[in-house]
Image (cartoon, rainbow, N blue to C red; front, side):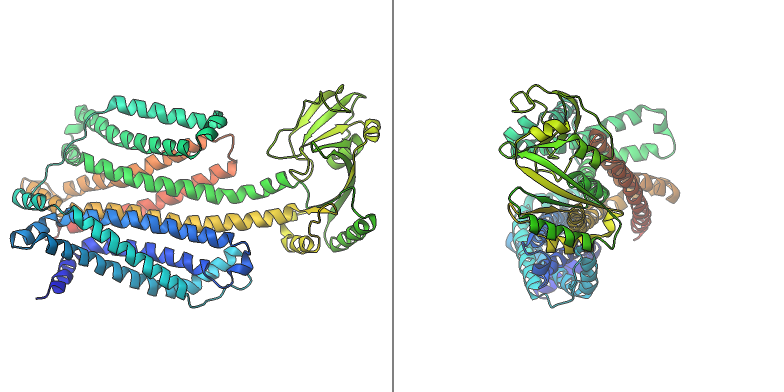
Amino acid sequence: MSFNHIVVQNILRDKWTYVSYFLSSMFSIIIFFLFTVIAFHPSLNSLDSSSTLGISLLLASMLVYLFSFLFIAYSIMAFLKKKTKTLGIFMITGASMKQIRTLVFRENILIGVMAIISAIVFGLVITPLFLMGAKVVLKAETFGMYMPMKAIALTVGLFLLLFVVISRIMTRFINKEASIQLLKSDAVIEKSIKPHYLLLFVSIIISTTLAYLLKIDHELINSFGILYYLAFFASILFTVYLIISQGMRILLKAFERSSAYLKQTNMLLASNLNAKMKSHANMLFLITLLLSGVFLSTSILFSSYYSVEKDSEANYPYSFQYIAPPKADPSKVEADIENLDKQLSTVDAQKYFIGFKSNEERRFGYMSMSDYNLLHNEKVSLGANEFIAVAGDRKMLPTTNVSDDKYLKDFKLVSVNDKNLLTTGFQQTYFIVPDDVYNKIEYPVYKAYLFELDNWTAHTELAKKIMDDFPNVYEKRYVTSKIDLYNTEMFVKSVLFFIGSMLSLIFLSAAMSLLYFYLQTTLLQEKEKYLGIRKLGLSKKELYTVVSKELAILIFVPFAIAITMLFATLFAMRTMVSAAFLQVSMMSSLCFFALFLVSYLFIRKSYFKRLLSN
């Protein structure tokens, strides 16, 4: 019998331990491969000449790769823990540590190579469908199938290196003494969680303070930069772990003092949870983190679709805006407007012509009350020494202090409008003044031709043609379109949602895989325990009840904590999120709950069947 034959037989003997590891690794490799297929697509340059999309996809691929590194490392550690007793048998029969490490290394390399090959083959099969979906999302005219040699080479090279490095590092954690000791004792008593209530209280205070500072003190945050966000993230992780571990300890102690403790199989359930409190807490923490990332990312990315139209209109109030600066050629401007009128003659559009004067040094615009009323279809009246301040830049509040203004220093502010008057950033603030005052202002005059289309989101092709026909020319013309901005933002949001959805699938599969690993690594011990208890009179129905409750805790407690964190975040951001965001979050939560309920029923049935098998 050769050494490699032992490796293969060792895998086949414990195939159920490896199957989830293999499938999850394969799934991560498939996602990485599909991202790189798009990133290296020949048509990508025509879609995005600045390669922003390509960079985004490569960054997403690297994020998948990093996550795969951590996930595979954790999986190998879980396997080593389960195989410690088996490795002890090899050691007692005379195997050296070098041979043991070689055995484990070859096992993981074999599984890794099989996962890579399977992922590439399956990836090539679904690539045409994937590219068809990407074509719709990315709005590409040509995005057909091609032979992705670069993607194959990169995927095989990086993941083969990943499996080699991780397998080589993880085998160093094999402990000869611990393996033999476990073989002799046949059981390891898990250390219980110690009370750290003061630490829990302090961590909650620190996390709450850091979160509150995010909302009120932006200068302090900017002064610390990335260090602040790292500290905040670390404090959240530490607080969540303490809440789970200490909360579990407190609830179990309270449950043991309640009258329900002595009813039915509750005593056995509590005893089982107490015996595995620390490992349960660690598993709940890991699954909670993965689910929190999934819930937050899907809610934020999907709800971002709902705000694109509103945000586009807030930045560019009109469907098309043509501004002729003072140095523009009047005949050229007239020809451009005639061309615009002709192209827009096929749609329902309202046209406005206004003018404003600009203090170009300070970027203050001055507009007559008549033109302002024309734009807003209102009849606002101003006194001789009154003015209105209107926003010119969405990122800045309108300037209201005019004490040093040449024309308005003695004027009275009567109202402030924080809604952009024209394209954001063209002027910092617009001052609306009486007509006679406007005529006396001696600043350069800008002429603005504004067009507003009915059902404007439906005219993206028209907007693309007009923006191509009328590019911006410095000091000649400035043309903007909220339709073009809307189309661009929808494209960006689609790409982000496309990438985020794929990453969320990986995190979901990882959460289920971690739970599977945990149940699989403790299966033999649980079978022996329940076999002994059944000899004392425990029925299958009672065993089913205990197992069902314990699995429900492992699956639905992380779900509940992640959902609570999601809605706590939404509550803290309630003034910044739309009703659509809340609706999407509710809908996605219900969908995920349905998915977890199905997963729970499937896992419970499968696990209970294997628990009773010989």
